[in-house]
Image 1 (cartoon, rainbow, N blue to C red):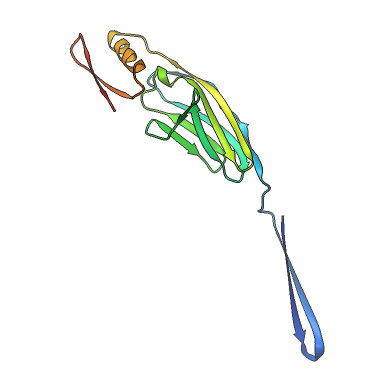
Image 2 (image 1 turned 120 degrees about the vertical axis):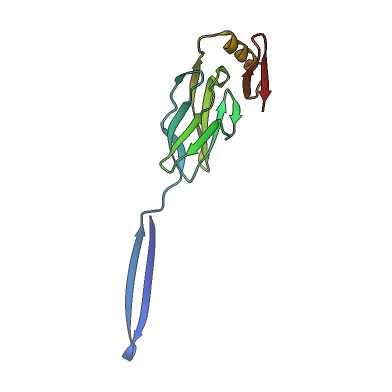
Length: 164
């Protein structure tokens, strides 16, 4: 708590002195708190081509920084990875677009402030769709590259791949 004392002294006629006192108690000051999870990340089993949301809730003061990793590799915000930190302490990673087998793994959320850091992890499993000649070829090409691919089927015997 913050206590503010204000004392005003007035000189009144004939040598008398008068005083006023004002006390303000501010309960808005908070003690610093090392981050801790009130709700941990939970494992997810999703289908290929879908979207997955990983959500946790953290308490901390002062403000926190949040990092996300998949299998130890840092993830950065982009069209596919939507990273959120809400004022209620919710942290979220939404993996959208074309979810594929390469998105499977252990996701870790690390929250840090001046008092310390804490991490929560969860495994994401991606179930593959039933295979066909087109999806098998696409999966092989996808495993061979760390890039996102736009796959345009050509003739029956080969495919065109455009990487960005």
